[in-house]
Length: 324
Ligand SMILES: Nc1ncnc2c1ncn2[C@@H]1O[C@H](COP(=O)(O)OP(=O)(O)OP(=O)(O)O)[C@@H](O)[C@H]1O
Image (cartoon, rainbow, N blue to C red; front, side):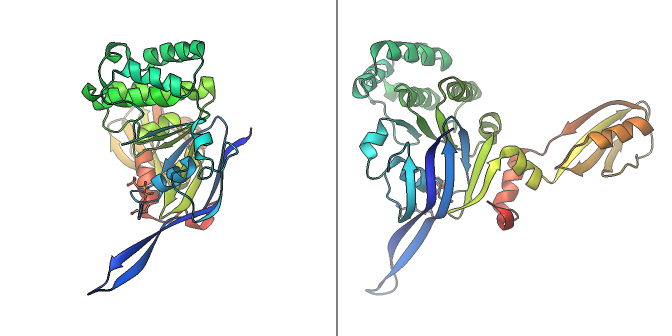
């Protein structure tokens, strides 16, 4: 598959002038993004994660063409975003917090109609897309409501529809589920997964919601202090940083703590015992050993929560030495 995003040694430095005493100002360089390199292939969904101020928005703004990099090379859909921003804008969709493509005073339906004209979406395609999106995002009851009267979740669903209506090749979404109720969150995630699968839309998602990440992104990139701290499969991240997994074992009768290789019992309650084992690698040998030596009735393996994994990544630099 071809790369739709190509980022090579890109940096962005903001120069600030700060007052330093009476009549004097000093120059402060903020390295928002430093020597960033990655590629995204057509049809991928990538989670772009990082703590506040890590450089996520700055990266996306450069990919969209709103900001010009201070150094490095950037290609999106074969174009140079800051130089060919207008041409690029026809091929990408953006769902970004404050920026909305919807007209505040118009009903949703009219905003969509205007987008159809601006993007010159062929009538049949527009009708099909709209029908599909209205269904998946449950927009029917609010199509005739002015945007200003919509709730946060309704407006987000409207924004997402607006971004996807022209069938863009790439869509950037910034916190698409923040502040939404459970029903809206589920609808938004299902919509993104399905559109990616069926239309092959490339999706770059920044979010602090780990359920978004777990349900949508096989690949995650983690940025910290403007640098890529991790780029790979979510599972790899979990294995490297996950610490421990828990194995819950139900035996036929209460027994003293089991002794098995590669794990240790951390709790015993009646016939149930909990073992802790390293997150990476297979639990199969351990399970066979238990089954062979103890009256095993049932067991379940608990994976480390991805929240914990990412939190550890932000608070330690354990990945730094062998980050790609
Ligand atoms: N226009 C600007 N002028 C000066 N500094 C800026 C500007 N925009 C961003 N920065 C700084 O660059 C760094 C990266 O900011 P950025 O907004 O990209 O982070 P972020 O990862 O998107 O954070 P958040 O999760 O809070 O949205 C921060 O230190 C921020 O203060």
